[in-house]
Length: 206
Image 1: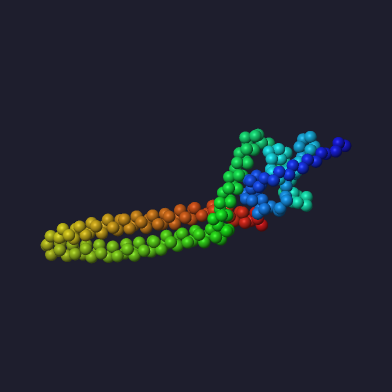
Image 2: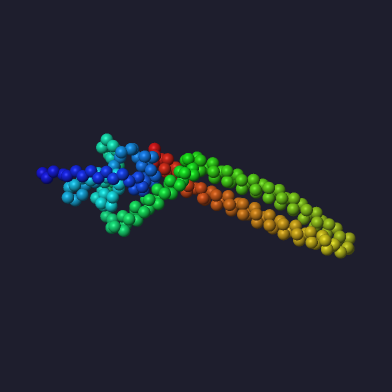
């Protein structure tokens, strides 16, 4: 039987490992781990980087003691597909790195979301109080106008002006309230994928 040649290609490439695992290798896999795959001519390759050939032929992820951590079947990729996969993984790695710079974990992101929502709810409370006061003033002015009409007197022009001004202020306040409600909904939608991804990273780190 022809002996299998063993080629050790220990190329230290943290960015490529990050592209495979979503962040720095030291945080996502044991120190010293590497990829192993066998080419069609029977040559065994052990690399620190995940190559296109390994993805095509299938590969194993081993720790520094040679124990198999992951066994991945090969896929039929053309060069462009392999390139797209590497780009996607690299992009995910950059996004994960930025997430972990901003948030220590999913609980931290939840707290950030809640702080943002709490601030918006405080603004809503303030505007609701303002709206109630404006509505009371409007009711008073409308009552003044009604009394004048019942008495057969012409409603003073100043009363009409105040009523119109209060109506505009009420409309503006209601628009603010609707905007704050929309901002709360947007905050929940904004943080949902962030929290989910941080949970996935936490689970993967195990």
